[in-house]
Amino acid sequence: MIRLYHFPLSPFCRKVRLTLAEKRLEVELVEERYWEQDPEFLRRNPAGKVPVLKMGARFMTESQAICEYLDETVPSPALMPRDAESRHEVRRLCAWFDDTFHTQVTSKLLYERVYKKIMGQGYPDSRNVKSGATRIKYHLDYMGWLLEQRRWLAGDVMTLADFAAASHLSALDYISDVDWNRNALVKDWYAKIKSRPAFRPLLSDQIAGFPPPAHYADLDF
Image 1 (cartoon, helix red, strand yellow):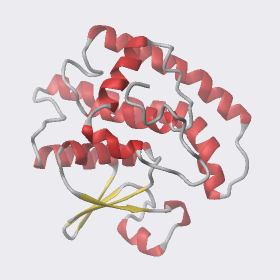
Image 2 (cartoon, helix red, strand yellow):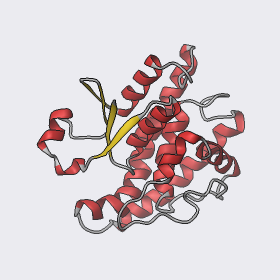
Image 3 (spheres, rainbow, N blue to C red):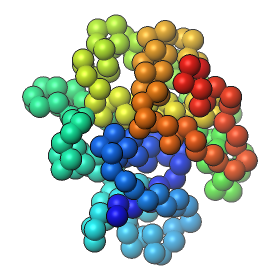
């Protein structure tokens, strides 16, 4: 049995969940309130972060490392290209979303609007929310520029780069913080990836006190 310690709106956990589902691997999901720093959880990952994937007796951490491990050990369907140049582009975009986008957008919107309340850390900082709402426009435009040249974000086939981007955007879409009308190519890309069977479990996520908008689980928006 594979077990994933996760938090439903964590984009990093979502990326691993998408990879597991795309590989058709059965997994037991264990929701983890990682911010409470439970000693048992810290024994699984001293860094105190999710996701943590348990396979057999082994615990694995860091979403990108987990996803690439899964892609190497369960090679079909492939989520990383074979050639070095294309792999670099996938890793570059994964880092773009998991680092730059996360810092400039996800942490400013999702964490302020949802995580602070759940963690008992007070009210949203309006300056952070305003900054995130401004910066997401730039990222959506960049994605649109990429999709003018490619079928998927990193090239002509779906890769981990698409999962990384969709994980962040789906978490933000849960709180209606994505303007899907800003770029038609990005909206079409998300509709395409959102309709995959691997994506459906994410669309059924529910966070107490934060009901998703009606369009969240609508495959046609």
